Length: 487
Image (tube, rainbow, N blue to C red; front, top):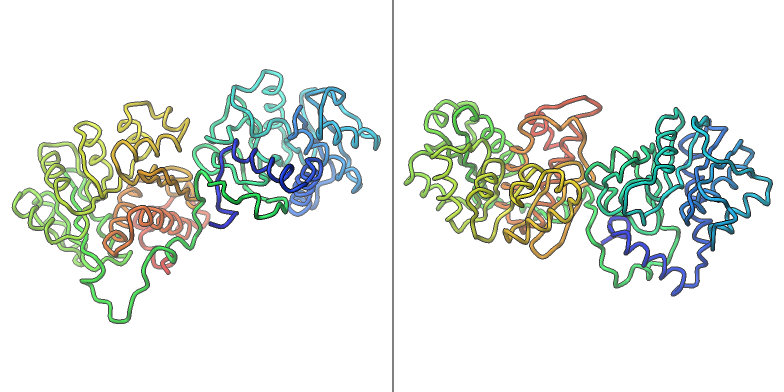
């Protein structure tokens, strides 16, 4: 796994720091100088017209990084002001050394005084160790930063954001850019974090590769080549029978379009054959709208059994509903020995009734995840990594916890994080398209965890391709964009 794609907990990043300093002889102050230089380079590259800086410095090493940035900016001829939340004389270690360098060069230090005016604000208040609500005095300064018209660049992590979960701890800085160091923090990649990090950049500060050796990352940040990594190359002699037969079941009354979206997404992803088992009247009325799929009467139990026996993989849930028919079709198909992708009301029925099996992928959004764990949606979002792993362990399943920075968790604890996707995808039917994509990849012979990772990346990248700065896109437009991102 490339260093740039390894995601760590804050505690692990602390261990990486320790290794760099103690095992490799890199002074802590040298790392601090490298971090400050990385931030200053970013500011110069992104805001070349900026002439005035305000560095907001806290009482730890994060504040020390801010003092380094301030000194570099002053030495380059910019107007610089430092707002200190702790008297520099009370600082210790490398942070004190950085503050002394600023002061010895004639740099003034001031207390917070309300409104902040500058071209760029450097947020160096609170680092990765924050694990409780932000104090009132820090919260007031954070509010002033957020109220300013200045560009905001956060050092390592936006102050007030939990580095492991991505949740704000009361007040949190809303940065335009965040420059993170040594190891990527897992919490900055998911949940609410993107609302606070802005553009997220990473700099390893040139520490040796051996610093990372034998320290297993907590998760993997998925790259756009996920499909190339996991999807087998097609031989010239490939035929439709070698590319998987997916059975999609769902589409109760008032929800027929969900199965259409899933089936079409699967076909566009490369399934050789797709059958749809749905309400009898829908199987007749929709067949002409997607003639490439085989439409069947899902109300006939014998027909459903025969379809399941011929399929390589089964997707249950798009538009399934919770009627008596829904319950029976759900039970009948989950009893099969085929791999299953379970979504939407298929997940709600699982939360209600439970089911023990293996060889399946669950794709909940946070609300469905909360029902599966019998907790609140807010609790799921407070620790998305913990929630995804808990569902995977409880149901012995690969789990896709959808949302910004979708997480893919295996029963063994592996987690992948998708960095792609955009707000224009927040429209109905997107989950149905994802179900079809993942089901298609399972049928094409990809292992379940790899399938889920590749499917989520493909879905998100197609959404990015379809959006192109638009406010909203339809699920059908995402499906149309699949050929643009398929390898």
